[in-house]
Image (cartoon, rainbow, N blue to C red; front, top):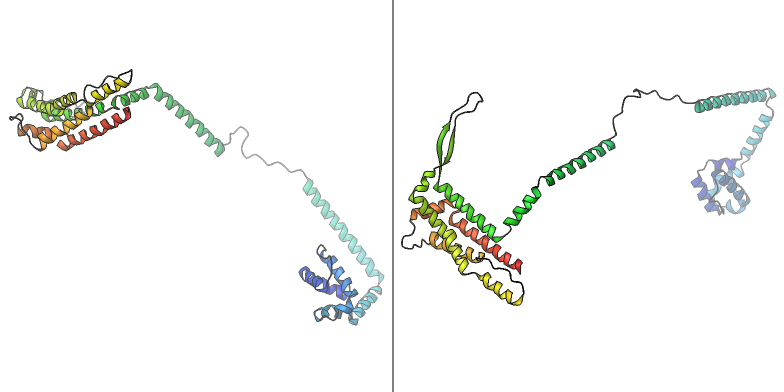
Length: 339
């Protein structure tokens, strides 16, 4: 290898690419490093007269013109030519021995690679079941959940709960039902006030089953025979039911509306016996006059009777007015829906 080739061989490929661009070498992009070194060496020797003037290429052209390298190369060749034949023979024997050793190593490696592998021993017997995978467990849980949901739905439908719920919704989804519920709450609260519970008798303790003595309580029904019971119940019935119903029956606005519709249609629906809107408005007016303004009519009810009613009704007269307000709103809403 000449000095210039050695110098080019010591350069990196990026440096050789930069050198090729600088000297103007063509079609060097696809060359490998060794081919690029040879092409540069030939090209730069061919264009030595033009490129040697560039100071940055002096390192290359010094080796081209260096006699020391040529002498060194020729002396090296002379020494090699004068070397005794015995050493060449020994080197050949060493090369053959190394080749034989390398061939033996390759054969051993190939035998190890191509040798059949012994299958791994099973740690568990074949009859022992392995645990399922997480995906299989999740799938099994989903199947059980779907099956349980279907079974619960069948039991729910067979119990008839849906029919009962629909029946209750149909019964209470009207203004009349809401007014009946409100009046019923007032009546139950008033009866609990007029007929307080008391101890009727004592049930003795039973030591055998560990049951202690307890009192059996019930309403004092003898109070039904008293004047206060009937006076209070009658006054409440008159203010909360009879007078409002009478007003709703007389001032029945729906009656005239139904008769007007009958003139324009062949089918006429029977009007309600009382107007729910008038019932709630008259009840609210009577409650406000009697229990708030204390309007009396020939001493029909005493202050004690009024106070008993106010104490028994949930929320007092405010509760009654709130219930009538709800009744007015539902009456208007129901009338709008009927249109």
